[in-house]
Length: 356
Image 1 (cartoon, rainbow, N blue to C red):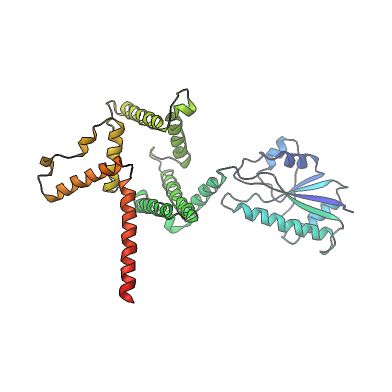
Image 2 (cartoon, helix red, strand yellow):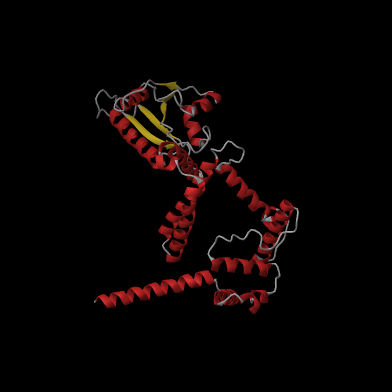
């Protein structure tokens, strides 16, 4: 027959202390004793506010904690003892906290069954998840890891916006390649690399003290505000008939925002980044112009604009090819990438035949 029960309460640092499950609060409220290994445990203020006392036990070697908890349970007169497991840091793997609690539970149960020296009999230990990461909780872990790397890693500490710029482009292309390959696991990994670049740039910006700094929260707040503004059919009272109207509304709202910011009417092409590959640039320019009602024939450059030689004539022809592809519902950038992959495969096949 059991003489005591130990509840090992596991919580996560990505959820505010005190936001516990109903079962966790019930266990805490009904416990004969609540114990913690440190006076700095983040749950203590929430427990004190709720009128639940907690005893802080002096630091104990790992091998002495199981018999201590088993003994406390055996002395509780049939009541339970709640042990507040180490909260850990945000950068710690959630699974590691759970695994550590499971090992401690097994050791406490063994100590209470007399399988360990000086253990009282009949004590059972169990693990209770008092709080778990919310959706997006891993982003908080990423912030904590990035903060630590910026301080503790010499390479990360010396990076700047400029030094990271090539990686921002490279990681985006690697994500696109993974998407095109159909390898979903690879795509998830590459999206993580893209996300790292966003986190890294925000972390660097947060260090500026000249009034131009911002944090990852500012970045997230900015995109949330933009999404809400540009989806009035979701967050407001606007009615739309379909996806095409959603896109037109988006473009109009965006143009209005740019006009208010500059004090002058904004061009439909404002904000198109000219640093992107030329084929993608031409596609985006034409797409923006089309949505603004620009006549399609403007993409057919007149001969006098090609007077400087064959190079300009070739550029004009490529621009026309982009228009032809779009008229067929195709993305010229993706089509050229697909053709490049087929060409790569043919070259490799030729090389294999040559080497036989």
